Picture 1 (spheres, rainbow, N blue to C red):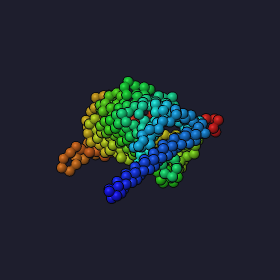
Picture 2: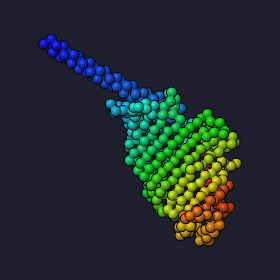
Picture 3: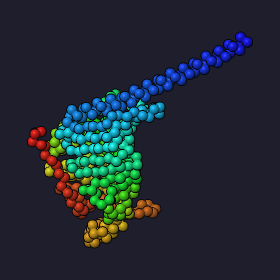
Picture 4: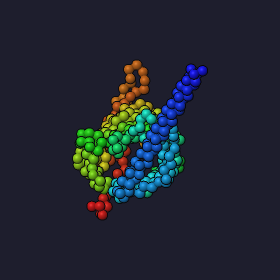
Length: 358
């Protein structure tokens, strides 16, 4: 009998210990969740105060915590961010809400979900965009501000009536990655931007159709990062210090045209883009015919380009479409291919520094 009572006591003791352990773990987990949610709120508040001190307008409603026990999530309703006088470009971004999230095992990775339609005003031009899923990811290291991040979108729709009249542009998927190095030397990339889009539908049919199967590029800007002055003065400082932009991994699948390429660009004395590069194409014969049919090129110009392409194109060993490797030159706003003028680019406007800031 005594042995039975001692057995029951042992089992009760083990059960009580297990319950106490579960309660301890649960309490610890809740405290960790609460601390992470608090860190998100504090980080947002500190960033907002820093921007307000610089003259920006940052506002949002009372933060709402949720997501326990899976993740620490904080919703910031009615988020609005407007640039201040020190910003080189005037913009206002309004979101119905932004939801920041931290989840184990990587507690330094922050995901910001933008579930509602967004409105972006840039220099008075309104751009509206929405997506089935729109997520920004960035890492926090040692409490320092993030030096880049990744934006991923699926089923993205962009409408900007002044720029895209008629219908909205769409993309089945879009990925943009930005990396900043403020301490970069003249020979290092201070900014690296990678863009990749698939299943793009243009707002209006173009000469090669309305669907762009795939587009991608990597942009690296080297040279010292100019100080906070007017946009024109920053561009002049960057140009005079030998700043340049390298485009690589350029990819375009549009209608019959398949193209890859690379280029190096800089700013000339008039602060207009100049540079050189190369492009490798297939499907160019069908593309030229489509451009002539659409009136983008005259029949004579299309025939001239076709003759030049046939002189330089090569057929891959075995079989396949002819490939042409073409040199590109951009000078005095004129884009030439194989020495033949292709297009004249519009002048890039540069606003002067406001008198009050000079």
